[in-house]
Length: 76
Image (cartoon, rainbow, N blue to C red; front, side):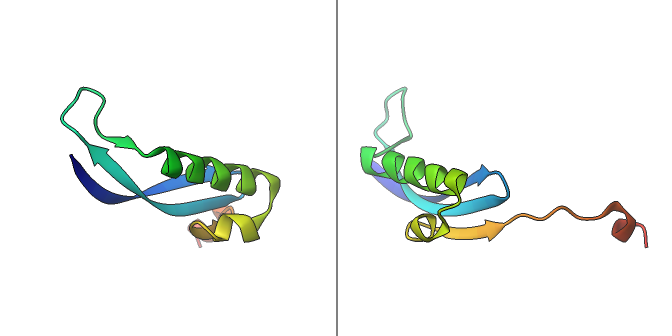
């Protein structure tokens, strides 16, 4: 069994989160997979972003605020 760290990105509304998880590879057809703890962590961050509770989301990852870019600024 091999474990390797990866970054998963979650997008909800005007926010995105960068969460580090550990992928588990065991050579089966279902590999790689997340541990139950990491799956719950991703769910918690997703729910926190959805409800706007950034302090909870920040405990498990890096949070970004997404803002639209004005089209006029692209062509100026």
